[in-house]
Amino acid sequence: MLTRRRTLALAAAGTLAPLAAPAIAQPRYPNKPITLIVSYAAGGGTDAVARIFAARLEQVLDGRVIVENRPGAAANLGTEAVAAAAPDGYTLLIGNQGPMVVNPHLFRRLKADPATTLDPIALIADAGLLVVVGPRLPVTSMTELVAEAKKRQLVYGSAGNASASHLAVLLLGQVAGFEARHVPYRGAGPALNDLVGGHIDFMVTTIPSVVGLVEGKKLTALAVTTEQRFGSLPDIPTAIEAGVKGYTASAWYGLLGPKGLPAAIRDRLEQATAETLRDPNVLNRLKDDGAIASQKGARAFAAFMAEERTRWGEIVRAANITLE
Image (cartoon, rainbow, N blue to C red; front, side):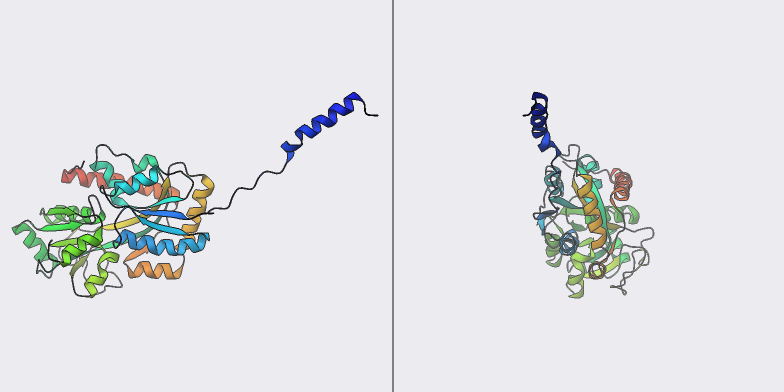
């Protein structure tokens, strides 16, 4: 016969038993498709890099990665979409210097400031740019382009306000001493269509977006904007070699997520990005498009973005431009 004390002890043990059950395992990541947002239209440099990256990343993560283009509002729409998403690792952004570090200097009221609403994960690649002219402007060298730009106001297109293609021309104008009229598009693809069609005079754009048009002789390449020539375009001089002293520019592409990403997911994505960028096929495809893979993880990428924000802020203030 059980004593009262023994009965109460057994009852208490039964009541507490569920608390000692093994912890429930966390679901694997990813267990559903990841959306990778690009803030520009399909066909541009950011889109090209994103698709090269996503194709290998989904193999590394063993989960689907869907590239989604969200152009508009000087690339702010893509930033806003990711900033508003749940910080669960299933909505990510391919960002470049325009919306990430320049727009905060151009727009007085941003709905989503990348510095406070996004978590940097990794820098993916740096890419040089190409100065190209269309049939509307029959020049064959940088010196001729600059001379023509000083005689009359030329018209240039870009992938959008504050895009790399916009900023590179602002910098070129500051270095070479001219001003040109800017026509922003919703991505490099539409701008290049108008350049080929003779509606604008020139562009400074990413190699992935334009190399096919140059090889097809629909556009004329005048110079690359890096300090050294591209291996895939050995006959095209640098802008410095072509007579524009002190002019270099590049575009960069990074992976970011909503603010508050769990450390485990951020670390997984950082590691997966590093593995993706070690793949020889990815490296070759980036190289063919004029881009070089980066080795910056989350912490280094965050520091790099802070430095870039300061650098481009000075350029924007010197150009005295604001957008609303």
